[in-house]
Figure 1 (spheres, one colour):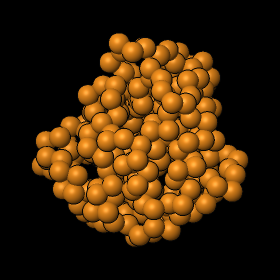
Figure 2: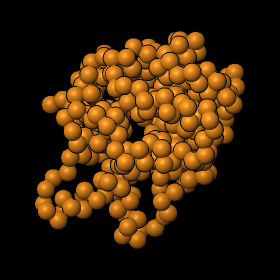
Figure 3: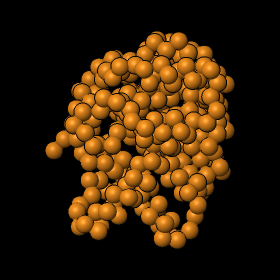
Length: 280
């Protein structure tokens, strides 16, 4: 399994869990008359609306809706179209958001050596996992590959480069760090992070164990983020947080500061996902 596929499975599981949670919260809020915490219009709200529609019998199976929302395709398993060398990147779904916040096709990374030097926090499996199944170059953006892996529930049709796999590993590290920000990983968070991974070999399991065991350290994560990837790392961190503790909000604030992200940029990212803003 490539790091791109692993990231797709973790991200899909997180968003699905958040969407289902939002449906349940919204149902309770509608009965009690209280207001939703979500800001509206974001990716998670779209998923919530689709799940609510499904529960009321509007059609479409869950795989199709998850694939369509996250991958921007017509259905799960159909893959997504690649734009080629002149494309601005992915046009929809989570991959589209990631390409959008970094300005299109480029990863912004300073080279594979820089990424492998710190992206996984010193993981012994970093180089081997990034190189597994990789090709030297391709015409796909990071978001296009992630979307395709999401919709196919498999490896993307176009093999990632080692650098793109390294970026995927960095995004995984960011999500796992964020999930631990409240001081512990409870059973629901473990299910969210691990339940969608399926079969892992020993090297992949070691990588996940290493990331789960690392102490929460926003500054250390930020130091390992190559130039141009700060918005992506922050976006994926927000995806893994439930906003139900002060520790989580403090972690996001520390991460945003360490990454050098201005408050208005941070709030824009929150709006794109559909969660409450961090700054007033």
